[in-house]
Amino acid sequence: MEKETLGVAIDIGTTTVALYLVDLKTGKKLATLGGMNAQAPYGDDVTSRIKYCAENGHEELTRLIREQISLMIKRVCLQADKNSEDIEYLSIAANTVMQHLVAGYSPVSMGTAPFTAHSLFGEELPAWDGLLIAENAKIYYTPAISAYVGGDITAGLLAARLEQIQEAALFLDIGTNGEIVLKHNGTYYCCATAAGPAFEGAGIEKGMIAESGAIKQVKRIAPPPSAEVTPPDDPNFSQVQAVGETYFTIIGGGLPLGICGSGLLDTIAILLEAGVIDKSGRMFGGDKYWLTPSCDRGVYVSAADIRKLQLAKAAIAAGIQVLLHFAGITEKDVKILALSGGFGNYMDLENAAHIGMFPKRMLPIAETAGNTAGEGAVLALTSDKARTQLEKIKEHCEYIELSSMTFFNDKYIEEMAFDI
Image (cartoon, rainbow, N blue to C red; front, side):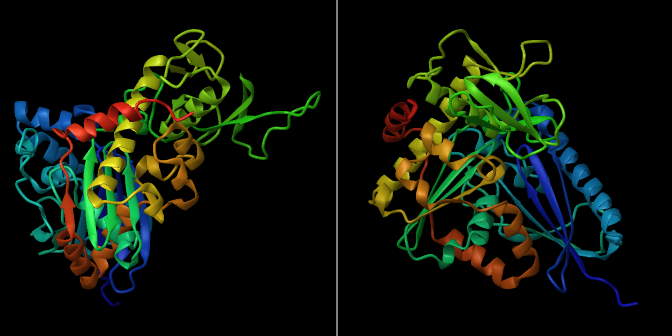
């Protein structure tokens, strides 16, 4: 029997990891596997993991992510009935901190100004010991742009096909970290915002990632006078008492255990519309809004949760304004808005525009682009041309540091208010 030639593409996010087993001869995905990043107990975001490494060294976090990838490779090969020793090539797309940790480099130098990375990758490295894959297998790390705009973004730009777009285009990767890219006249203006983990349910009182039991979507349905309300034709919708008639979708059905980022955004948009929250973010009538009956296992959104999402959305909105300023264009000049990331893929675009995460005038041109980091990793795995394109994208990127920029800070304060 002819020996198979397999590859593995990996998207390492701060919160989650996605892995794809691919037939290198055909480019076909044979199996996909995802899970929580094993480093999560050491911090919700890259800043906290850098701090851990500064105090304890990076070796433990490197061990955790490498062992997780090894286990995921075993599981995905069992799932597809394939031999892991036929895996000859791996590609990894991740933010720069995650790339450092899986490659075995310390990320500590990225924690303080001038935020210097040990490597910006875009190269092949030998596979680490302990991976049960083909002898002499190589790992390709997609090129990073800076300490806080990583290989997941170059991979995402490749997958979103921004190289083929001539008009001004905006790319938002919204997850635990918020990276923004504006392409204009062949230049990619890039920045990273301190959005925080609220978009993925972390740090929220009843928050959780988008997994079974999470409220992922909240809808308000206004019934006609004296009419009975019929829930949407979806077995996962459950009716709750709220303002008017409100329904929510639970991932996997059953009882709600918590709320993920997309459900939190929907709830805040509904409460803004109902007047329960004002433009400043103040909640009327108490400091909790219950989505389910008040009890030990009840799910609510608190005033503190609203503030965290407000801070996160303000960072994204201000980052957009900074890039427009540097490119010398206005909102109306942008013709495409592509949203990616663990949160960006699943949020309700109308509600996102309603709370002011991105300008309302961009809503007609907004579209979700899927898991672009994962798709870009697959392209890099299977194509020399794709790897060349990644280097070309990197060469045309202009990174803009926001941390000490007065213009960004001013815009951040402006964007704190909800866009009612």
